[in-house]
Image 1 (tube, rainbow, N blue to C red):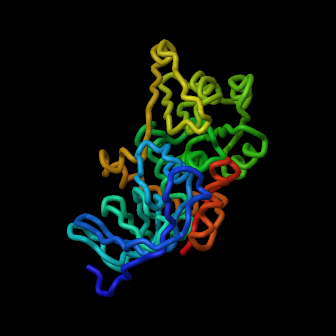
Image 2 (cartoon, rainbow, N blue to C red):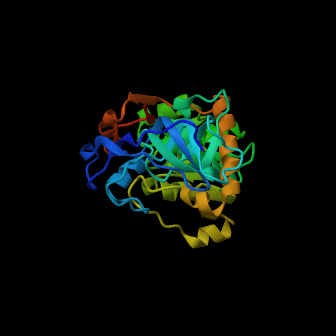
Image 3 (spheres, one colour):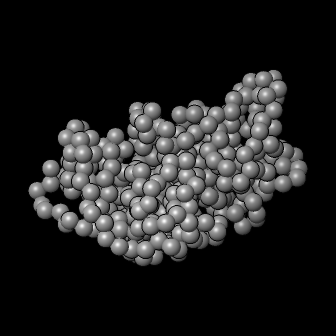
Length: 331
């Protein structure tokens, strides 16, 4: 329980009608109170992501009735606790996943999705990368079982998940080949840590093999579209293809006969399902991600904006694919 009185109202970015992110506005909302198994966090920084765009447009698989506040990853200090929150306590500096409401002065998080931050973890970087890094880590380790020395091919390598996937794969000892839509994004992926980078398109398989790698052991695919078929055809015997999303707009299909004869596996990965179906796996991934953040093995260009009023314009740029790297709002 908190020992200090909390304000009855808090600042919040409010979506009153689904649609254009520029239609969001800053207002006041009741300060939430934690239930059993929950903590209340005074938000210091919150990530701004493509998932927020989907929520505002009502295109996310988990629908949000208006009015609501977007924001699904926060860093701050615990100011109140319900019962049964384990070792969490008021005053702890934490990072947390929330289902919405992160773009506000206070946010409620489940204790199982709240992680104590090591001193070495920067609040802004953690808020920016938490969900995409967890997605990448779960894809690489829990789903694909990546091992040191394996070759990992990462699609959408200049996007949020792609950057984290290539950096975490390298951190785990893999050889990383990045794939992206143009030269600028490939150059960005190389600077971020990829060993090599390729543009999507014709002769992708031949250009991959010209790098001196005959096949990929693991493919991480957040994009689908033109990347999927050539990437799947590059899988080695026993290779693992992890589907993370369809940012390219086209949902791929896979030839079952090729999966059969090469003993390949196609796997799905959705962060949200780990949050209620495999909390042990989530906590393993979080511990690994926080170590990588503390060691600065995870990094990305981060645009920091001050105050909730700046968030709608950032969301609009993300929606128009005019953002490279990640964005964070500080409060």
